[in-house]
Amino acid sequence: MIIVSIIIGVLINYFRFWVDYVDGITLFLGIPCFGVLFILLILCLIGTIYNCFKYKQLLPIIIFIVCMILAFTLQPMNLPEESIFIKHRTKYELLVEMARNGMLTNSPDCTGSNRFAYPEGYSELVITDEVINCIIIETKPTLVVEFIPRDYYYRIVYIEDKNIIDDKIPTCTCNDGTIIKWLDNNWLICRLDWN
Image 1 (cartoon, rainbow, N blue to C red):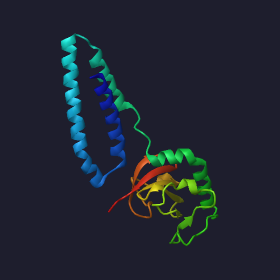
Image 2 (cartoon, helix red, strand yellow):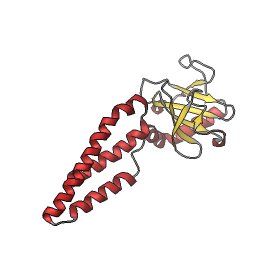
Image 3 (cartoon, helix red, strand yellow):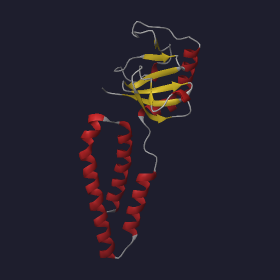
């Protein structure tokens, strides 16, 4: 029961991350996983209480309670984009400075007047070939720079004046994007709506 309590705690923490990261049909398909997890949680609680009375020991119930408290209070795992940003923050900040000073160039691969190519030496900021290797820049009403490092729908976004935006931001290629997480005062992770 102790091992099952620990496993359930880890699964709860993982599902907290998963709910933050996905939405739409993927979240809907995950509902059975949550149901199974809830049933396991109840069975583990019943088994732990039964063992406490049977063997007259409080240690299993204490471990179960500690695992559940930790599962709901620990910080969930970092989003993949957050990990990429933390690792390469200096380069992202240099790219924003280059965008502010008009030092980025257009490329045939980046169509549109607000799309610019990554300069030489910045290829590690895009870790998959499935995404557009472009930096998207909007200048009005404030400087907004979008990076698409891993998944087309999840973007690392720099916003110069965050007082201009609210929960729905005019970034993610000028579609409604939803803020997943603020990384600091000017940086956030944005999810492009799938529809």
